[in-house]
Image 1 (spheres, rainbow, N blue to C red):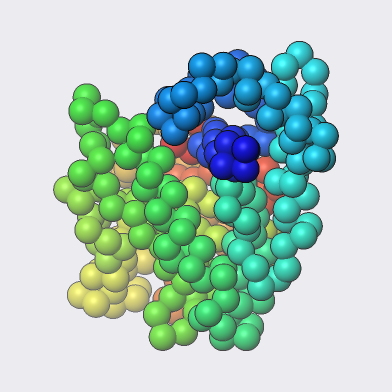
Image 2: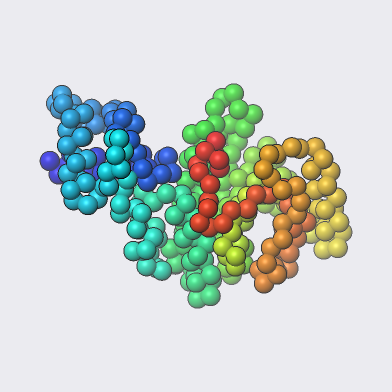
Length: 278
């Protein structure tokens, strides 16, 4: 019985993580978990009734809350951010919203201590990029102009020393292999005002190396103006971003000039998976 209950727990967590939610309906969960449950427990011919019974048991164990009309909410996920210490990463199965909030609120702590072993570093450098990559590849189809094999997702909290503005970039290999040149999508973490910027941006490193700082600023601004006139993205601000001055350094001070358009999200209001990856 323990293996059965653990399987149902795992499937609940997987459902909530994939759908970026803490709630689910019985019918949706039955459809979602059917293939796994039937594969692992082929002898259980009453698996639907068994799942209903297990959900009731999890409710009695105070792991689920019944919302009525066949809907449930995971209780431990709701409070996980309060239970997580400053050193511990979000628990497995946490929503994307919880992970982004954790990154925004704990990065400054890691940076002030110069602690590369802090859980937030691996979250930004590897865990979040991998989750972004998985979601993007899941949504990409052969009919898309950008298919999964074109995508590269990278996260960075700096090299040698921690960056003031960590980022996660999404690159189309046909246009840009990385942030040095070309066009790409990048999430910029504003850890002063607890905001995440989703931007369409330009690489600037090669320009700075070839032209110097002054001309680079002019070229980036001119390119951004031209590109803004060629695109139309609903709910995006068609202007440069205004980052807190205390975050700006010689390495990142041209983020404003290089930004073509952006959306900003407060830590507590990070959007649904459908908005970010749909």
